[in-house]
Image 1 (cartoon, one colour):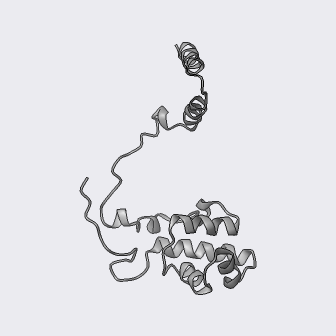
Image 2 (image 1 turned 180 degrees about the vertical axis):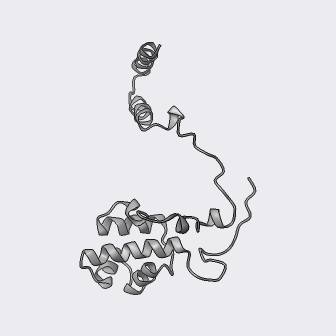
Image 3 (image 1 turned 90 degrees about the vertical axis):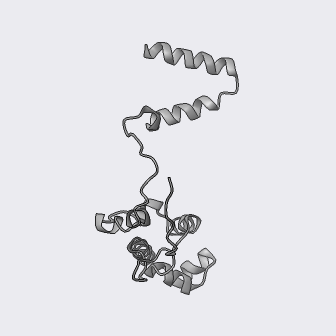
Length: 146
């Protein structure tokens, strides 16, 4: 798929920060305040300056995945905490939605390959080192399913 690249650095057409970045920053600030952490203390725990924490909290600077991971770890929340409660109007501001890139493929939720149970089964099977034992287990599963 040929997707036109927009060099927006995450900014909206009017130069404002992307609303998703602003939302994530607000959630970061909320959690920091709930823990009674100053920006300085959070910055020190992350190896940043407090100005960088301010920029993240205001959505002025975007966070990479590794930085978001570190922040979630320090604030003792799962990654999805930063996105919880985001309304559909904000979600529609993602770059792929704004610039029509779309997702290059769709996942069929009914596809058994995408069930957690089957993914765990494949992971467990792959840990069996003995090829004969692995084949025997596969054959047993096939027989039970028949």
